[in-house]
Image (cartoon, rainbow, N blue to C red; front, side, top):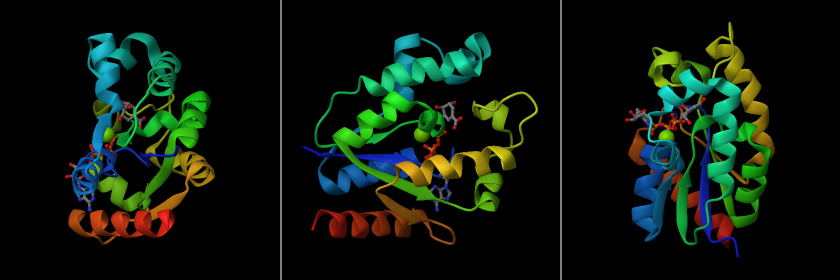
Length: 169
Ligand SMILES: Nc1ncnc2c1ncn2[C@@H]1O[C@H](COP(=O)(O)OP(=O)(O)OP(=O)(O)O)[C@@H](O)[C@H]1O
Ligand SMILES: O=C(O)C1=C[C@@H](O)[C@@H](O)[C@H](O)C1
Ligand SMILES: [Mg+2]
C-alpha cells in the first residue's frame, strides 16, 4: 500500500523543514534519510563525500534509501537521491512522491556555498548546471508538484497538504 510521502527537490528547497511539519500535521512518522546515512557511516555527509567522492556517496545513498522500510511516514531524502535509480523505484513503490519546486534564484539565495553544504557537484559543475540537470529527474519521478516560490514556509505546508488531500481522493 502507498502509505508514505516522499519529498524530492533541490538541496535547501525545504524537504526536511517542510517534511517534518507535514508529518506532524498528518499524524505520520518522519524519516530524514540523510540522518540515517550519517548514523550508518558515523560521519557527517560532507565528510563522507570528501572521503569517498560523489560516486561513492551516491552508492551509499542508494543503499540506505532503498532499504527504508516504513509505513505511514514522511520520508525526506537528500537532494541527490534522484540519481539513485533503485532507491527511487523503491520510493515510487511505497509512496507518493512530492516534488518541492523552487526557481534557481530561490535555491541560489539559500545555498551560498554548495561544497560546504555537501551538495554532490562534479568537478567544475556549477549550481546552475546542476539545477538544470536535476529538474528532468524531479519531473520524471514526481506524482505531485508543489511550487514554493514567493511562499512562506507555512503557505508551502498548506499547499502540500491541499495537493495530497486531492491526490488521495
Ligand atoms: N519558503 C520556504 N520554504 C522552505 N524552506 C525555506 C523557506 N524559506 C526559507 N527556508 C529555509 O531554507 C532551508 C531549507 O533547508 P532544508 O534542510 O529543509 O532543505 P532540504 O530540501 O532538506 O535540503 P537537503 O537536500 O540538503 O536535505 C531552511 O533553512 C529553511 O528555513
Ligand atoms: O543535493 C545534494 O547533492 C545533497 C544534499 C544533501 O541533503 C545530502 O544528501 C548530500 O550532502 C548531497
Ligand atoms: Mg534535508
